[in-house]
Amino acid sequence: MVETQVKFVVVGHHLRHKQASILAESIDALLLIDTGDSGANWNHRRALEWAEEQSCRVVILEDDAIPVDGFTSKLAGWIERFPDALVSFYLGTGRPPQYQLDIATKLITADKARADYITLPRLIHGVCYSVPQYNIKRVLDKWNHSKAADYAVGDAYGGPVVYPCYSLVDHADGPPVEPARDNQPRTERRRAWRLHV
Image (cartoon, rainbow, N blue to C red; front, side, top):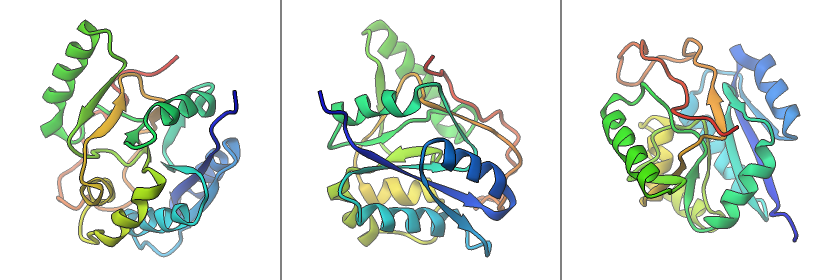
């Protein structure tokens, strides 16, 4: 069986240049550093513009993503299963708070049904995700520069998002490098609900 070809791009902030470089090198990813504080929205759009030019599926990671062991091979299986879906490889606790009860309920339902993924109506994390290649142009055309990066991607995509019940990356959960758009402090624990082992 031929393994699905996937390319990776890491979006990073200049204050996290070192960790972004280490992450990019570990998965042979293109590294896009925001050197001028242009913001995550700008850098994620830049990553998608690069992804649109590729001939295969592209996975975008933020500089504070922590891939599980065997990340690239595990990820390829999800992309093969869901070639037409926006897939988020991180499902996190804490933020955004308004989705946490829904996530908990859906995970319980998935466990009962022995399902290994849930869907949510929008992309709620930008930590690690992949837009189907043929949808990238539509996402860029509908892009909203005023939204947080994850909402800008997901809302422009305009469909349900697949989240594996066991995330393929965790989140380093350090202090944010840019002010939150809602001006709310990030005090909640922001880690994966469950991690693939």
